[in-house]
Image 1 (tube, rainbow, N blue to C red):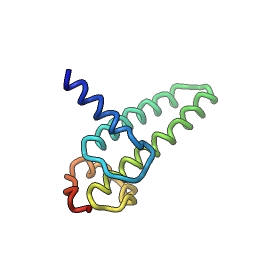
Image 2: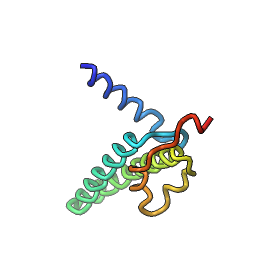
Image 3: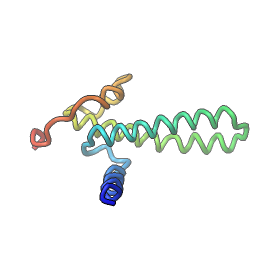
Length: 110
């Protein structure tokens, strides 16, 4: 029961300030968000390929942009955790390095 409560609070904390580029997040939060984005992107591509309805295609594309914004915001927060600028998320394949690098000590940011 306590694991369920812990996971609930963890998910609530993880999705707090979802669209903000300010703050810091750890490896776990970033990795979960990155995996969810990869699944969404795969689903997005599969639906676009097999769907012939133009309205549905436009709707899916419009839903893609908020998800992309969230992933960029999460990446910027992860860069802040490493002591880097949030702009580093725009470096190709840097998102994979963010999964494995350990963050800085929180005391060093005060």
